[in-house]
Image 1 (cartoon, rainbow, N blue to C red):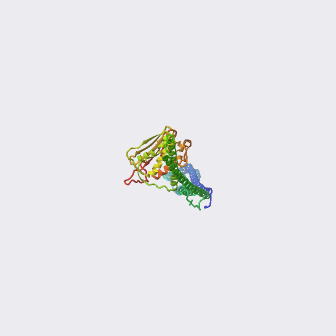
Image 2: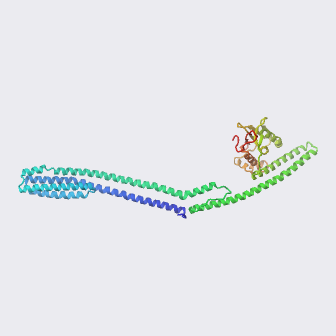
Image 3: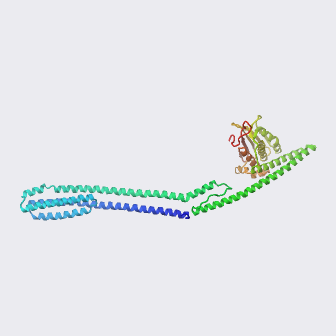
Amino acid sequence: MRNWSLRARLTAVLAATLGAFAAVSTAAYLAHSRAEDRLGSGFADQIMVFTELPEHRRQLRAIDAYADNYLTSRDPAWLDRRAAAVRGFIAAHARIGALLHEPYERVEWEKIGREFRAYDAAQHEIFRRVRAGDLSRFEAVRRAIDNETVDRHIERMSHFGRLSIVRLDIERRAAREAALLTFAAVLGFGLFGSLAVAAAVSRIILSPVARLRAQAGSWRLGEPWLLEMKDGPPEVRDLLAAMRFMADQLNAQFEKERRAGRLKSQLVSGVSHEFNNALAVIHTAHALLKENEPGTAEAAPWHDMLAANIRALSTMATNLLNLGRLEAGKFDLEVQRVDAAALLRGAVSRLEILATRKKLAVRLEAPEAELPCSGDPDALSLVVANLFTNAVKYTHEGGTVTLGARALPGGGAEIYVSDNGIGVAPEDREKIFDGYYRAEEGKREAKGFGVGLALSRMILEAHGTDLDLETELGKGSRFSFRLRACDKSGAADLRTTSGR
């Protein structure tokens, strides 16, 4: 059956099970039918016995009465009648004996027949002596009246009838037990057959499918498909071949995308690096121009706008460069003691001009005292800068951007940036963290690459925490993250997250 299909295997199992069940059912039916036949035959014979016994007892009394009449009247006609009755009795006795099946019944009945023959012979002896004149009429009648053989025969026949009733009850019980055994045999084989079919189905179908499921569960993208199955049914082997082909295609596509991603990261990193160099030159030139040229009230706004855009472009280039480093696994954290409150004050000092251009109010909710936590200060400054610039981009003029920090009960700090801007739609909540994705509303509101949030989340994940978002479309957003407390050395175990 190694190369049989699943349909052929299941058909063979079901055919064998049904054939065996049919054989057992047939045997049980035949056994039950024979038991019923025996019961019916025995019942019919017993009914015949019950019918014959009263007449048989009457014949015996008639034989005794004819003998008494002859002895008292000496009329030979009574002997003729007695002889006819004896013949009828003997014929009935043989007929009843033929209806008996059990050995002990036959023995008892034959014993009754022998005793009757002895009784008949004794009466013939009396008749002979009477005819020979050896017995007087009085003595012959006395012997006939004192003979207890007839009463004993009648009593034994009545007892035999009671034995027949007992026998009939025994046969009835035997037939009932046979019916119960037949039912038990059919039921037991049915249960056994069901278990056998279930075991066969499990072995034929579920076992290879379970092996496929185990392989599919342990397989990882980029790894080869290792499962081989040489003894399974053709359908399962075909499914295995299809899954292996699918795994090969996925691995090929994965390798292609990995190469494309590596190339993209290298390209982004290269372009970002060169872009940053160019911006540094522009920034230096602007600083020299502002320093050497006399300032005027009319030129000041232009200088501020130029400086703000240089900062914005520099932030974008830095984000792209760091994102490429993170994707390439070349971004290393330098964990040390960080003052969360000072981190926010520095961000506001550097970036408040971006909010001023859009006439946004900036609120700082941070304690004056130090709020120590653990992290990489440069990387965390980049995260706060990204969250702040995003809030400024997507908040309308006259709105408010809030930067805040608070101490956590178990140590460490929570940092948050909130606004009352456009918010994020539910379907975009996770997409905005993927990188290079921008919601349609965001595209209409401001320009950008859509990498700031992705970079921020990756940096925070490297710190052992996550970037949380609370938002409502049209009412604003609140981004927050939690940092672990410092130990005595100022570092932290970034494998666990404080307050989460």
